[in-house]
Length: 210
Image (tube, rainbow, N blue to C red):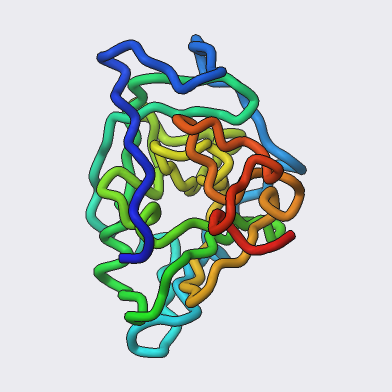
């Protein structure tokens, strides 16, 4: 699906960090804007855009919580240069959502939408990684509101901004389009192992023109 996936992290067991990163003890809270108030009766997860059947697919909070639960042990690399290694993330795998609401054959990218209109774009291949997860838990505990409850996306092989907090849905796209931070100077792909932090580092083909 889509373009080739970025290189996966070697894993915490090898004690390697991407260039420019430092090991973080604990989990700092970093986000832009206020923490949204969770209202379960109004919460909905949507898959829309270029779906295979042309329809929008929706789950309320109870329905989404009933989807298959899986876990993955993976690192979190923040563009602010801290890395948290070996975290256990639990939730609904991205590939589960792809199977339940498949994209049309011509889809190449996904826009992840979160509260307050926040967005982040991903290549479909990155979103479809077997380690990409819509996390509800970390370390066996429910996420706190500050860390993204009720739902955050974790894409371990990319910088953490590519996995927004407070996710509300995904849009299938047939062409790339920059998300919130990508429009404001962050790299369109965001591979920490290539230290792709900022848009001025982009090479031809890395993303749409700013």
